[in-house]
Length: 395
Image (cartoon, helix red, strand yellow):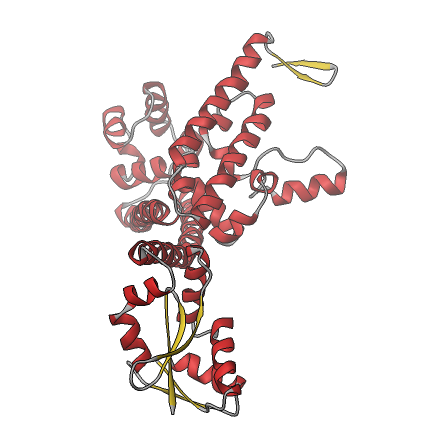
């Protein structure tokens, strides 16, 4: 006689060809444990309930079994060599369980099986979303790597263009330090004789006094003359760099969208760009969630940290999170306290994003803002002093 075996939220059940139940091994009553069992079965892993039920039937002399999963059948064949396992989809046990689940639940003393199924399905869905997020955080890591490569390439090419154009207008390199403004002037104006105040103002946004300095420097420049062919070659290179800047902007928007999907709490606390950088430095969302707040605080400052350890100097107080406005814009002696507070909120946000999927980002962000206000108000009350032990330091 073939024993048909199948699973449901209630446990593992065995039926004969006539649909009569021969035996069962129920799952624990906790929905979380049930969801864990079903997730294990979906991955093709044999549960203890399967082993107990089949071992009992083998002891009674049964040797033929049917299941609805090829993976389970293959693994059970390796464990129970005296028995044969065939795959039938659907088999008799699965048909009975799907058609009579409520009746079987009542026999087992479970009153509301619908609620149990709903809770278990919700947990399985959350687990699936977490796994999907774990896969999509790799996209964040690769996107950040691409962003770094674009920045590196754009800066290198921009540097070469500046050296090239400095042969014609060397004074411009000192007067316009920003790469994009420099390239925009070269692209729009070309030769230095066109660098008049009105044209410069149209091309870029600069203070009036800087515009006047550039126009005066163009009139008295000591650079070599360029013809249209020389300028065209430089302009072609500048256009390529601007294309790279456009791609960079698109990738930045893409990363922000990924952060909204994968790590909404981190994004709410620290913003998409910084959060994505932290995930990339940690090697993924799951890795970031396992890090303590003290490590997150200095992520990105590893060189400075190891240098401080070798030289017995003071360790850095912040890494990538220094880019956060409340840290970057605060007095130096406050930055360490604010960085610790921010790292603590990021730690909580990362663990919630990696584990539960709930959204608590707004509350965490509000708590952090309150902490920043408290730190700054203490400074005001102390008359501009930060107390460290018995010493007082004025900012």
